[in-house]
Length: 588
Image (cartoon, rainbow, N blue to C red; front, side, top):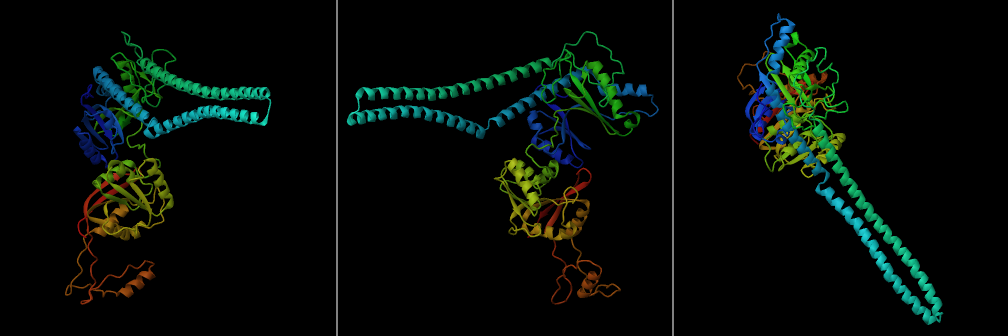
């Protein structure tokens, strides 16, 4: 079993990736993480890195991230081997040494602690951003201002009352009223005004006391939550391992699919914490809860099913480490991949896949594919990037997240798609750098050579229906893309296999037309009028007539395309494959 890594040292990971995405992930690992010992396998990439885990989980081309436990040659199990002997070989190869599992659990615990700390920091940042803080301060300021205004009203009321008293006294003296009666009335008025003023003051005091009590209650609640979290962390450490190991019966099924829930040691009321919450300080005597997830292919699958491998390994690991099985809510999960090419064990470091984007509201094209297309365009600061069929804006958002100093324009003819794209852009807070425009990709309202890079996912018509005949309109669409792209700019397209074949045929170098004096075909050529008549009778839309030389009358070849082919990559889109084409405009 490989050493996962120590405190502050280099940690060995592996990531899963979609078919065809391995080169993108390998390049990203070396560029962003300066990864070492990068090994590219089918659907997986192994690497070592000493950077902080919060940078590792920001990988864009990966699907899931694992702490690597074991990477060895595939198991060689003869089909004639007895099941008992094969199970013993399987257990010895997969489990390995106890100390290595303890070291892996310690490394996993440390990484989980770093991730939990990063989540808490992010949550605190989101809960108290500048905008929210300013709104809170404004709210508090308005309340205090209202209270101050209330106190001012009280004081102004007193001053106004005094003025009114003086005026009434003056009027009474001038009107010849009885001074004693006037004095009695004024005393009565003063008592009423004092009662009103006291009532207002009491209300202001009550508001202040209530707000202070609310703040103290909120602070106490936060303190209680912190204490409860600390108690859970302490209780999750479990009980100390006893001197003699208890032998579990094989009937205690530890498979992923069929095992019963086993409560951890420490009492019936103790519940294991979630993987995303638990960050215990693991020692050699800690009891963890775990489960096994297995995927078997090739010759191994003919001897053992995934459930049987999970059962064998689960029983062995539980006996060796005294860990407890928990299928519903384990602290730790072990993933096993067995095939004719490799034997791979790892611990996932996050429940959500890395391909999940928290800044996307409505998903369209898979985010890893969109990121790969944007990386192929080599966007530079100050670039203007166009997506003439932006859909819900996945490519634009992925490119904008990675390239902060470029501007982006999305074009689409469908109002519903533009509405979803606008919602996604607002959700990702990229309104200042991504603009949307309603227009047709066959008539872009842009000047020639005005775009530095063009990235587009041409609709396949499978996930989202389209009324456009892409095969028929492909020449016009590509010609319009070529027109708005500047010399040296990159064109990156995602196409179905059918459209990919048409694009290659469309942009392939044209053969020169036969010159006068060459051997003609035995059948006389039809005139352009006769060709259009035949096409109309066959139900085929006639193509525009080609230009002819004014002197010789020979048909001129179509103008050569200025798009030079750079690379073509096949990637998996789930049910079908897609092909990413990159072209570079070399001539105006």
